[in-house]
Amino acid sequence: MTTNNKKLFSIFLIVFIDLLGFSIILPLLPFYATAFGANAVTTEALVAIYALMQFISAPLLGRLSDRQGRRIVLLLSLAGNIVAYIILGFANSLLIMFVARALAGLFSGNISVAQAYITDITDEKNRAKGLGLIGAAFGLGFIFGPAMGGFLSQFGSMVPALVSAGLALINLVLVFFWLPESLTKEQREARRGIKKQVPFTIPALIEVLRRPHIGPLLSTRFFFAIAFSMFTSVFALYGLYKFQLDERSTGYILAYLGVITVIVQGFLIGRLTARFKEAVLIFWAIAILSISLIGWSLTPSLPVLFIVLIPIAFSGGVFNTVINSSISKAVRPDEVGGMLGIGASLESVTRVISPILGGILLQQFGAGAPGIFCAVVTGVLAIYLWRTGERPINVEEPG
Image (cartoon, rainbow, N blue to C red; front, top):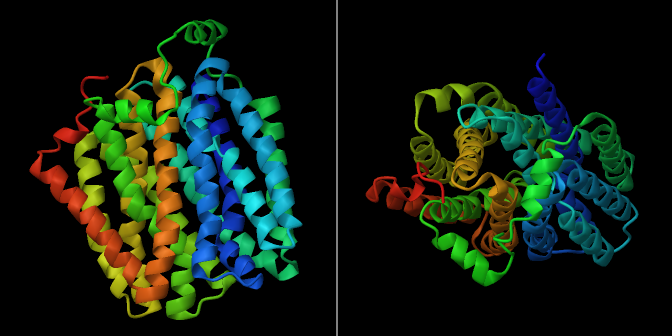
């Protein structure tokens, strides 16, 4: 195994363990919140507070990793996650749950920093394939995590959270002893000397969005994430309202989604990017998601739901891998971590908006309403990209 392959395997394992801990908790949050008397909107606000704090922290952690190194930021974020999971495990009120999720969001830079690590050790030809490993690790985490969470929940509400804290501790030890820094000392020192860095302010964000190549990529990611974030965030409530699914059943369905994601990002993405341009893959992922979300909204039974979830998971797996590859190619090397962080931050905004809006739509108009809304958003985005000849996602000339 070559040095780069060892690093890829290491970051794959670290992301897998990280997502395993995260996905143990995710499908259980609505049930924990309702146990404290929360309604659908308050429950989705619990998801949104995590995203709000991630919106603030992700670009800062990304820029910090560009200048100080990826390894130290991974260690920092994992230490914060340990504390957040422990607080959640001992939460005895909605207020404490909100504090725990806010802290978890503040230290949620793991994935974007791991993606930046991959860009450091791959060339442009192999980058999408390397980032696909991150997606595969993500998918594997969602295979085993929700099922583990459903199983562990029978032993008490604090057990899944404390197990997640233990997994974060294992990850911290792995990073400390096993993962080498991907940036050399000279690279870090040179980047500290670059004064023209993108500060994280609203005017600076607007300026980035106006840049001719990276701006359209970030905007496309934002609108795709509006739909996909609503799908993932309301899925547990959707299952509860429409099919009366419990924690364990919801966890098993999310595990099924994870299997499809692993197949796409671990095995198919390299073949797809070798055959098709990234702009083409981005367009078709959006179009397929739009059609599939209509099917999700109108699903009459669980067997049909399992069929509809296949193209949804496929489109999400393709888009989330290829868009990050395209973003990394559209900026200077010293901007990669910060720009991926800005992308993660914009996606976090959608995880503030989408859960609350999705909860309102579901509560006021029924379980199918979020799916129809998301299909319209992605449908309009696909039509826009089609009419502009995919020019908004041209990444041939880095900004």
